[in-house]
Length: 449
Figure 1: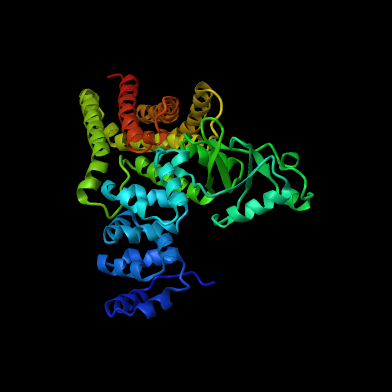
Figure 2: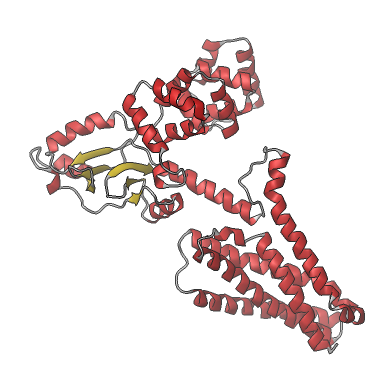
């Protein structure tokens, strides 16, 4: 199948059909287009066009389209729909997606939308999900799943599964619970099909099943599902009752959002922003780290000012200052990036001291190799002592930068702070200051001033 591509010609055609109110043509044109591709189209339309298109398409399609839209576009469209129209969209969604949309609605219309839902059990499940913190497994899970009781026989089990499966888009697993709804294990479809219809489920189910608590952080759920290659994972409450499941598509969204947040932090952006946000929002997100960079630059200038004598006597060392600062920043960012990645993937094992010792040896090796190259270059053009001062400074600066870049993310992680904040401007600025201080101090010792 040829991947969908939104061309300017197609977009113009859709806009013209909307302008001429050609509903039949529009429905026919978009009938076989995937809802994610329809969302891409809607994102490019103006407010009136987007709302019109959503209203003329069937709710079983537009409900999924709403989940794929940019947040600001979805907010605009929902504001142009009546509570009954919003309820019709929500009725078609799985409970997790439905709860996410309801949570975005103005508080004054939430109750009215809930009361408009035709499926009262669906409404009850949505209300239950709204009680959970959005940054938890409970806020991420869906209520749709297939579960059977351990005291049922296979025949009863199959009958019940048929009824439950009507409300489940995709059946990843069959969960087994006791009379108190506590999760006991999972049921193999093969065992179900090859076992006598009179056999009780307790005799054939698999007691080992990975699960997460409703209060677990989404990032931890992602780690578990990634580690064990799970397509879905059951969610249990504080006393072990099965209350929902989280599927891989939800975890992909979590991983994507976490990666975007970490990338922005590493780039020195303190808030979750997008390219089309307002200038004020973008300024607020970027300014704190830029102020940190400014303070770091002032600190470096003050340090250099305290070594005024050596700068006046050996002006040439001033020309190596950008090199020392750049190497310190680069090495620190490299070290911190590896540590942050390892922490995110749960690959960092052992004590902090062992990790620091390893990083120090690695920095020493890299520093010696780079310092030898720098020494040969500097000695060729300058005095031996200048070459020696610059080269030794580079080795020490690289070692210190590697240690700082390793220690800070590990320290922050131990304190429950996102270690991604350590990368980028924070590490670069701190290593610039330490690098310049070390450089001029060592140069002063070697040059005897």
